Image 1 (cartoon, rainbow, N blue to C red):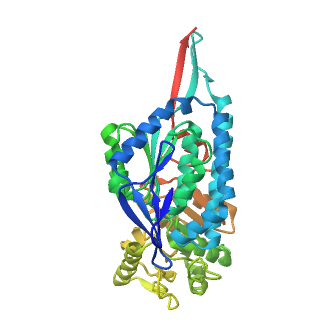
Image 2 (image 1 turned 90 degrees about the vertical axis):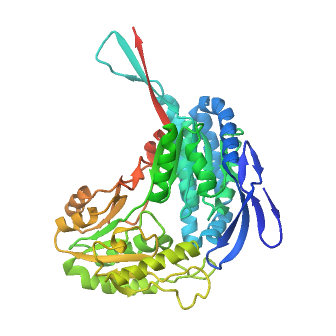
Length: 486
């Protein structure tokens, strides 16, 4: 899989038809905590994509006809393989993403849970095949089949690389599809190790393939390739539009998980300490590099002053540092380009009239690395980019509301609709507010827990389709009805 050249290893970035291969384009991988080079990946191109598709097509016939029980065995082997390499995968996550140890552990455990969940779902799918369908005529019978849609292209982002990969690969394999995965060129190290785990599971050659590379070199030809039946993409809205446009050339299926500008609503009867804790977790986990970040915090007017005082104290107490620094609670942003983009958003917000209460600058103790102190803004104009656009960094914007109806209206005033959080001491109030929010997932008095059994995806421009749960597996299946004259 790799050879060592000098200090940094050179890693093969292609896994096609059961073999690791070197690509032609060198991709440098950086440690965002130190700005040092970790490795060089040799990425692929349109030819590599074509080779991977042909390998998948050769494997599809046998894999698509395998029983759900047989697929479940493979998925559980993958889950067990991830568990066996848990520490190594955590280390690679931390080195390549800058995640503190506790965040890396959550990611790896999520991968294990996802593969095990879809193993269970695959196992039960055999008994659900050929289901009878009631039709309004005794002269006919009908039954339902769910069949794999074919070869699928999976494009995953850099913020939760192994997690988003598991959310796509596990249901695709469970459904009987063959896979071509494109990891992010920014954070491929843990992905390549996960790919090796999958390769070691005993999957038939060609069922699972990887082509590392840039979006232009690999993502674009994947999206347009006529041999790929469906593309599942997680990333920015701008790139999601391009994926959809290219997929339209061959009228293939598309699933998109895109941006968010989500709200946490602190109602007048909320537990203030809980509200602050949930705001911190929703805004600063993974340094705010989450599509689900609740970066808009809406607070009942009578609680605003006390809430802001506690929030600023808590934000300033967060220990920002690399994963090797003892007690680090928040890591760096992923690279220089993204770090500069977040800084520019902060400066633009100040120019627009928003009031910065704390943070938004490099910590004094961090001379190197893409570190940023957690920022808290208030008095943010409703038409500013800081309020309307996804910043994807540790930036919270706090605003007061006067009534429940105003809170819901402010939360829904966005082109996104991924998630939301509600903090309230009243079940009736919390349920009423949750029901009024245009979001695919709402947490009530809870941190951002995500279970494989519940759907992931949002309203409006946040998503097209759903991941996780049975909906995640159905996204990779076609529906076939067979009607018979009796």
